[in-house]
Length: 457
Image (cartoon, rainbow, N blue to C red):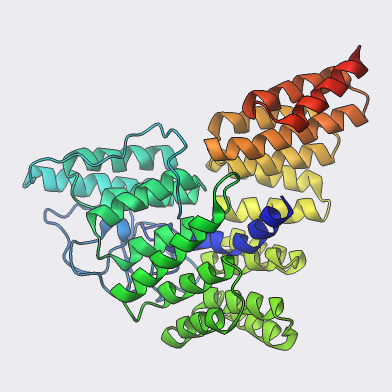
């Protein structure tokens, strides 16, 4: 368990890669890894003109990505209002990705082979993609998912719909569904470096109960495959460094991967942030501080601010993290990842009331985020509001995947311990039974339940 927690902390900094790298390439308002971004100025009703032919330029994001030889960078077709922050000229793909298909998704994202479509079908497809992009920008994930699934029925062999689904799943940290989507993207477009980077990213997310060693090995393979497909892709090298670091590699090979990413893109804040973390792990404090300062200097847009803030959290630098997150939210008030990370930072410094409000806002935007429910439940427990904590864990149960249920059982068990400490044996019995219903046969839980029943009687 201790090893798993350390891995979770280490990998937290990668989370934003899908959310701000692959996850944001769809026209999200917080693009970061995009090149030659083409902004579509929206009317007040965000009405988008639909092209009658399929785009042939490389200036569209993944959800609108043309079927051409993979470019060195994938730009995003945005449909959001102009941001007061400067646009970056990076490329790639993120939020943060890896994905066992243990979760039973409500949607069928399997590939359906059909006849090529033309004419009105092309226009309808482009319309559906645009609708999905706009809904994602507005954080209306249910509508976005519906639009991308509609586009699938129109042109199942066009990979843009599956990137769209992968991105919105990543936005919400629904990693198993995102993994399935990106694996499908690789099947549709096997020579896409971006798809391999996205899958590498999800494979570096910690999943309770999963064989992390095997997942990290595959993450490295995917990153190296992306490099073989595009040797000048800075994000591929950065993800290679992350994969190596997740496997315990904190030597020169990992450092060289990050440095190569920076050589290819000197404005790559993500790589500087990861490099700073690596230097710190190697007790090179001066070099680490310099790299972190550079990352902050380059964090001039919302997703980069969030990314650097998250890396700070993995290094217990919560004050610096909070400053960046508040700045990011001043520009993007509905960013679910920024809200989640801020809520976590506030919980750490015992600002429980504000943490509760911030996490609730995140859940309003992303109601299927298991990790946010888990954090909110922890806040309630810290405040002694155990009944609210239990209600929140029951909400988390409704959206949890099979792998997440293992963690959920542990959280129910902790809540049972809290009830016991507060002489509420009857409530403890109830939540211990709930935990056993999720993790049947767990000896430790059986002992806890037995003790609680004895106390109750």
